[in-house]
Image 1 (cartoon, rainbow, N blue to C red):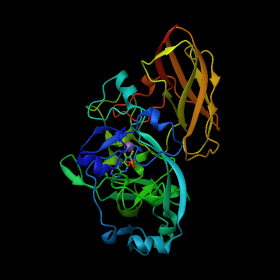
Image 2: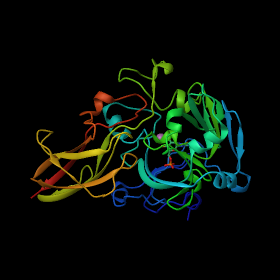
Image 3: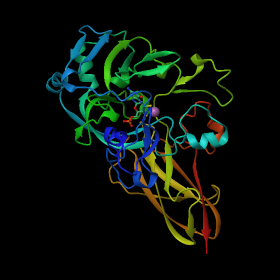
Image 4: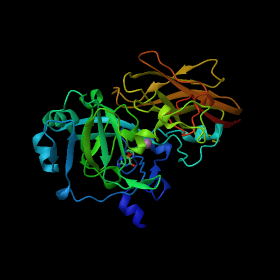
Length: 368
Ligand SMILES: Nc1nc2c(c(=O)[nH]1)N[C@H]1C(S)=C(S)[C@@H](COP(=O)(O)O)O[C@H]1N2
Ligand SMILES: [Mo]
């Protein structure tokens, strides 16, 4: 067994995209078999090393625009604040980048398929309870997080970081989590403590959390100021003015077909199509629809999961009738506010390859 497998505690079917830094995802068909993703299949996105932290020596600092700066041990965090549990789906902003790369190259970024998403039950304390204990000042507008990992960018080495507006930091769903699916976090998922920001891109859920700083401006970290920013399609790396990008925060409505896969050969007749859909963090997914005639007519999929809220995905299935030839299956979702998804990836292409939520299209070969 390789040391990577031991260290990262992943399932044999887990697809490792890169070993260093460690990045990988479950195969799509495994992913959509479980409403709550097993920890050993949960996707992982890392920009630097995986720090191994002794929980006994771990300290969290809360500083900046607070009346009482805090330095907390893990035990203090557990004892001083109520334990809460919440299910939330994390999605990397780079999920489905491979389809944007088909439109035009995106050098230097991971070519994620649609597996950079997973759903887990997180336990920990509410960020708001910790912030109330620190007594935040009225002029604080953002909560900035820094991790204990080492990431090197532009010739400097620093901890991965990012921030969220204080309004989101004070909402009850925003957690400092020490457990995932009923067990202490594993090293790749941020042991011993990480932020969980439900409804936001995965990048704001900072792992191996070292510090929370309250400030007037968003984080000055590379991953807030350069990466995880959205630019219009005409902007290129050579012409980019970084300050003009939009900092990504909330998720976008998305729907993905997990079965069949592109290029699959299927017999004519009835086929069950499977997939997932996730909302924008404000509205629940209302319907998922499928088309096999280029979007002229649509049929509605059934949700497989009884439970549905704004922080979690839905799994769905639909029976479609396939006739021989090449068939493009298209999926799209609508949410409870009437929002829908963009039709084509080329309309939302951006040079960093983020937030692809175009209609998902899967072409299969159907034989007699
Ligand atoms: N400290 C730290 N936190 C981090 C990252 C990182 O590289 N370092 N990656 C972020 C990104 S981009 C994503 S999508 C999620 C992935 O979380 P996971 O590995 O538990 O799936 O963690 C976020 N938190
Ligand atoms: Mo991410």
